[in-house]
Image (cartoon, rainbow, N blue to C red; front, side, top):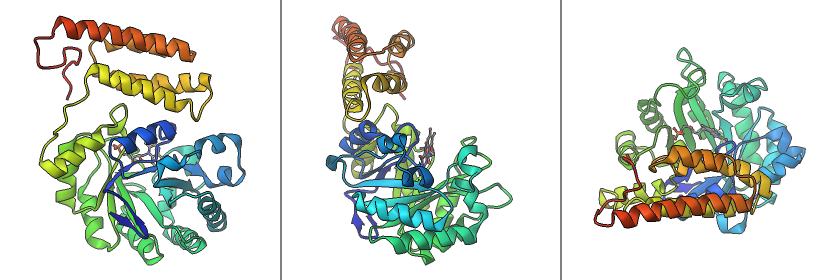
Amino acid sequence: MKLGSLKLRNNLIAAPLCGISNRAYRVLCKRYGAGLTYVEMLKVESYLHHNRKTMTLKYYREDERPIGIQFAGNNPAWLAEACKQAEDEGYDIIDFNMGCPVPKIGKCGAGSALMAYPDRAAKCFKAMVDAVKIPVSVKFRAGVNDGNLNFIQIGKLAEENGIVACTIHPRTRQQSFAGQADHSRTAELKAALKIPVIASGDINEPDFGVKLLKTTGCDGLMLGRGAWGRPWLFREITETINHGRVVTPSPTAIERLAVLREHYELLLECFSERHACQVVRKYATWYIRDIKGSAALRGRFSRVNSRVEFHEALDEAMELYEREMSRDNQSQSDPALAAVG
Ligand SMILES: Cc1cc2nc3c(=O)[nH]c(=O)nc-3n(C[C@H](O)[C@H](O)[C@H](O)COP(=O)(O)O)c2cc1C
């Protein structure tokens, strides 16, 4: 897929995700087949003020390319300045967030709240596009609420102002994350625009991703929650696109724990040991969710406070599953995995 001048190796993108899409997450998504990953959404004011938290959040390394950054804001001049700085900092693409429903962003008139002000949104698009040579994309929702579903209008304004691609998460701002994403809206947007349209929302299984590509005509898929603790979802979708089914078996419990180990080590590249422990607790929950006895393990991981403690917990879990596997080595399936969907 091409996003303006940026050519990607495929059409699968790892969503920008607040609190989630740090370097560790991005490296693993890329390893398993994401064609593009993003730093989580940054408020334009925080980015311009170089506050300490933002410095950590925007951290990336060369091995992550292509790498995108995403801004939320509603002030065209600030957004233009942020885009210039992001270009200088070497990002390959900039995304403009018009999808975030959280009050902290909405009360500043940014994120999905900006969808209620199309003229202002258009000014932001133009200011950002004019400020840089790298491509600028936008991500938005279906509208503010069911009474104002203006995603086609916003998409057309984006296209007219030089935005290279639109990602739609087809829920309304009012819906937040409730209900299902209505991808008939993705199809409508695709039919209305010439620039690439990327679908986001509820892509949790490979078959669903492939169905979306076919039924909506969308150009790419952006994976969010489906890839939490399951970065191999990118590989599974790629295989389903290429071969009509998942070819590589789903990782065993032991393999999942090995990915968790690597995830933690990668977290240490961007966070202090203590912070990495706090962050890895939630990832651990996701990696082990399909594993037999995960409740007890969750408790174990939720208390880790140092690298040593993390590795002790992981080693115990590994030993447990190695014993289970050798006990049941007649079986073709992984005995440690409980009803993996
Ligand atoms: C915890 C969380 C954080 C998110 N952070 C961002 C973000 O920083 N930028 C963004 O564009 N979308 C963000 N989203 C929205 C996702 O990118 C995605 O559009 C949405 O979750 C629907 O896709 P999914 O069902 O695949 O998760 C976030 C969603 C969640 C649940």
